[in-house]
Length: 102
Image (cartoon, rainbow, N blue to C red; front, top):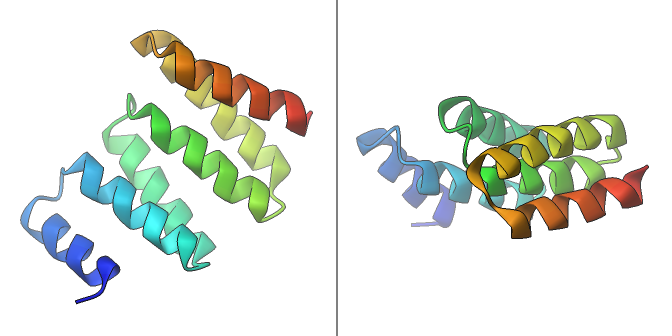
């Protein structure tokens, strides 16, 4: 069974599993399925707005696809999430990426 099928099976049994949803988004991104990956990141962040890594990886996926304005928006959202959750490391990484994109 491939990773996408395995993660979909987990999510079928546990639709609220944030880690599996994140993994599915990442796997789609690694296979070049940008739109599907971004849809999974969007669902993850809608259901788990404090899942800070999701913002950063969604922004990276957007930036790689040349969608800079959308990447910057995700970074702004992620920076707000990182501040709210006290995640200084993620905040620093996202701010550095945002600085590079601007």
